[in-house]
Length: 442
Image 1 (cartoon, rainbow, N blue to C red):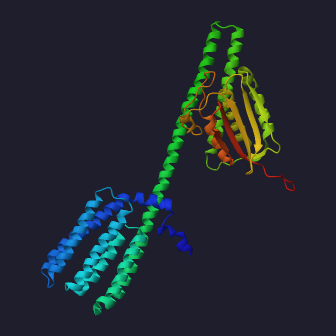
Image 2 (image 1 turned 135 degrees about the vertical axis):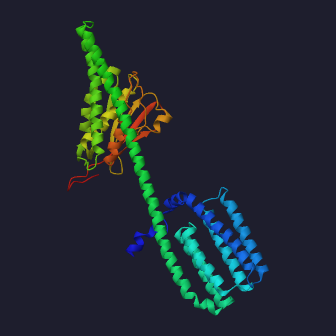
Image 3 (image 1 turned 90 degrees about the vertical axis):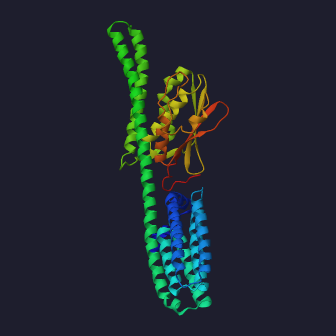
């Protein structure tokens, strides 16, 4: 039973994967159908010439051959039209049953030799399994129908003693060919699975390469800007073209830029470590309220500079179980975005609450220009371009992508909540920390 459960896919994948597998084989199945059709056209034409010289009722042979040839030509024509995947096995079945029906008629009424029908049945078994391109289950059903109809024919319609002697040969070739069919189907399906796995890995590698290129591009730009500014300030200072007060103002602004770049580098280093094989999260229980209060203090100067107010609505028991460094990075990115894209003199609302599914939610709402639709679609991906904030400063576009990745690693997520009143809300979810042994939860 373990063998059959392990290789059950030989019979059929699940519905979605089976449909994809059939589409994957479409080109080769269409070629197989044309091959079987060509063999039928060539064979019927050749046998028509051979049967002309045999001691048979040629009028019946001619009539049946013309019907088979006409049907095969019609199917060949269909193969060059826009034939569906479902129609391909039906066309193979139609050719098989046309050939076999014609053989039954000629064997019964045209005086064909006894071996004619059994030899044709052998040939059909082989063609259906090997050359037709049919799925194993379809080939098995068709051959079972043919074998059963032959038994019925030889028992009740034409009880020829020669047919009885062929039962053992027919059964053995039937079993042998279908064992071959299992092997062929297993190989085809394994090839498909390997192809899909290679395709998946290629997508991952391409995505990682694209992410790497984006990161390098952003870093080269963001590192160059403050370095160029610092170089210009030092050059002016050396020439005595800037006084001490102006130097202090410029250095203060430059310090903020270097802090932002330093945080970006720290986030990317943490992100790159998480991409390495063998990386392990350092999860522990974290008091979100305390962590948020620390982050609030970091943004006091930016809040004051834009006349913003950050209101925190805490809830009790807001302890999460996650990697603290990743949560710190996520919170800083969300708060930084809220500050950057808020209109001056507005309020940023930050609410922390428990959800009903064992998660803790952090909702950050700011007032500013709505996020365009084309940006929303890829806002948490590495393919988003940088945006200009309310002061004309350009962001990297990486923060939300890194945040989303870190949250997923910790069993959480981030969502952009749709709004129509000039506000933007990002909602973070993280797993709630389990209650200590013996503690009661409400």
